[in-house]
Length: 230
Image 1 (spheres, rainbow, N blue to C red):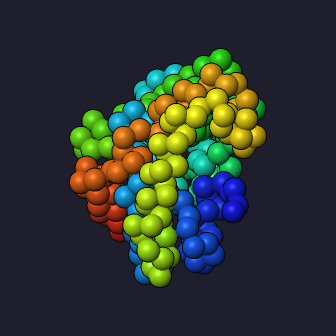
Image 2: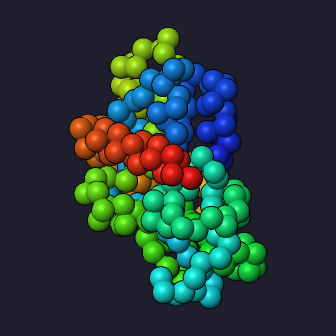
């Protein structure tokens, strides 16, 4: 089992490196010749999207210059393009380094994912916009961030049963699992970690159903249109 940054996972998926892999929802449609999509284990919700923050810019009326993005193939990049198609000056970097890059004035703004949405204010950064909120307001659909794929030769139901069982176990054994979670977390504040989990692990994680599929299909449709327009 490997623990990789989301951009690294995306790149690995294109090479078919792993039998089971989590990838950005924005590129999952490009992998359907190798993988099948699971209906569980996804990162999806209504208030869990990436956020755009800055050290000096505090409103949408001010111009955006260079913006740090957590990977070219990520859903965060898609959601930024969806909200700000006019901004082309972007720098791609590991998600865990973006907050500091904004603080160090390496860029005028940055897109934060994961724990970053809980810590940016205490670091002195300003929220410019919530890209997930923008998506929900425009589409009325859940925000599809990440999904799990399995190689076509593997039984989908068997893996889905294991993942759902794992989620149920985790829900009732928080304290037992916390040391393991903190070991691989970028944020060691246990309260922040718990808020992170409660936001991203929800009913859609167990089965995203028709709303999730509608959201994914709409995302892929818009993504392809944006790419055609470039």
